[in-house]
Image 1 (cartoon, rainbow over the protein chains, first blue to last red):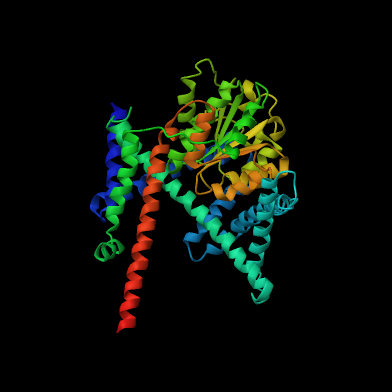
Image 2: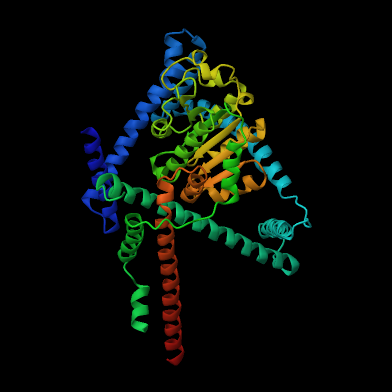
Length: 206
Length: 282
């Protein structure tokens, strides 16, 4: 019973959203507002039950871990942004969050992206298999010319200009591949909805 | 002909929508199941699981939401199915709050085929944890301290499967189903590069081009990119699902998009050429 109501509601809201493809209308607005409202409510409830209570409130009140008062106060200080007079208080927890986050990500990017990716691009240009050699040459030329394109300290003329032009070609090909993948992704989402409408709702699929 | 081309140049976008809609609906209604090949990154993902010794503890982080469900849910189901069929233990977690219900749904679907699998012994759901990269790094130090309880509130020390699991050293391989941020990129940067954990990824097609360099560098053992990746994986694990069913629609809709781009360009250049000729003659 409840499942059927859920499916019909899902189908109705899907069609409401699709109606925007014709033009903006009250049904689309209804679905849009419902989505925003329900998402906000869902997130607030989820954060309360999954983050605030198990990580702070319960250990503080039931287990007596008094040290947790510090993050609690820092958390409350974030809300001072709502008042002009005390908004400066929010800078302290903000600074802490940004500092910790920056520290963690810099290490990750340095070791995982920069060093390992540079190492992965140092490839032999001549191997036993001609296809691997061709791949490695293409990769090396693509990396070097791509980097030349982003080198702005000297005017792109002569050999540097030629390298930059080749770099643009490599960049364009990569943008094309990304666009192709984006189309595939969006089509997948549409397939998911049409699958739901035709299969789960109308039972037209095997 | 010119009139047709002029009309095509200012074609109402709603006509394109109708064609795209039909190109998806018709192949779903009348599938022909076109064959497709399996690519190397998907094979790498599959082989990584095949090579594990039975009973390995595998961490699966389901970091996605209903927005990316058509692409990622089929691969989530296929990954659980593959792991159970090889006799591995699954530790599920989520860095996306919305991933909790989807992971549970995927697990329930697979459990119908493996009714002998027991919660706490063969699989466990640690639930959602806020904190993104901080959670990942914290797990490197201690998983029980990062997740003191599972999703149902049971203490980790009371769960048989979690006995002896301290940090990533006790996890054989990590599989990430990634809908965005935090996801595969963060797992690579914060966990794979720091702790050397084997990592496989299933991601949306939008983010796949960003992750292919990690496959080439060996930071990812394999990659399932979008619905196509999911379909290839379903083919390998011999469990046809919604991804394989959607491949016909993918192919036809891509052909339609390609044709519209082609026709649009022909119309644009011929009308532009005509305008240029008119200007010169004046």
